[in-house]
Length: 91
Image 1: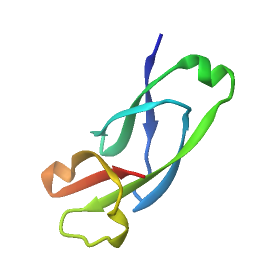
Image 2: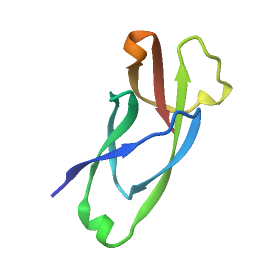
Image 3: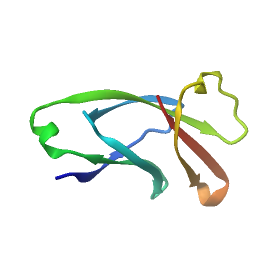
Image 4: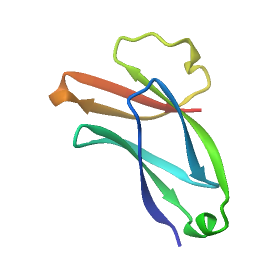
């Protein structure tokens, strides 16, 4: 049985997120002006302390990043009442 878990993100361009092995990233959304990542997780992996590290990249619209090659798009998030748009990738 799998469960959806929420992981708060920081407002940084690059961060490492520790997820249970086999977790499937579903989306990143704005929740009360904070970005949160939702993932489908097997809770038995939590009990066995089986984790992997995933690099999450945040890119603002119009911002240049040279390290997006090979990164997988996750989601676009609207912040500050639509004045800011952030695009999230996983590597």
